[in-house]
Length: 151
Image (tube, rainbow, N blue to C red):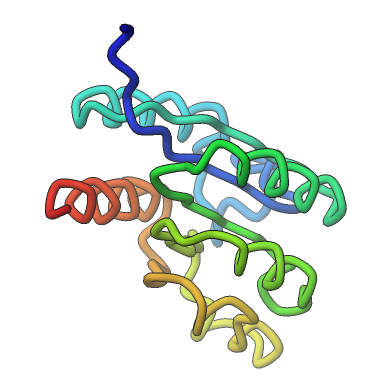
C-alpha cells in the first residue's frame, strides 16, 4: 500500500491571483505562485501534501469545498480575500469540515477600513493569522502540522 501523506488544502479567494501586482504596499511583492511554491517546499519538510486553489468566484470556491469535503482533508488554509467580510455562503461551506481551518490575511484587517474589521469566519476557524504577509501561510501550515502531530 502506498504511503499517503496528509493533505492540506490552500484556498485563496478573489483578487489574490493579482498578488505582486495589486497594492504592493499592502500585500507585498510576492506573487501567489511564488507563495505557493515556498509553502509547498515547507509542507514537504513536514511530511504534508498541499493542494492549491484560487478563484475570483464565490460559487466556484464553494464547489471546490464540496469536492474536497469528500476527501476528508487533514486541514484547510484559507485566505478568503474580500469574501471574509461578506460571505455567509462561504461560512456555511466551511462548517462542513471537522478538520483544522486557519484563516490567513496578508494584511492586518483590523488596521484597515472599518468594513474589513469583521470576519464572517472568525468564530468557526481554528484561528486567524493577520498582517504577517506571505509568512502567515507558513504560520498556518505550522499550526496545522503541530495539531496533526499532537493527535
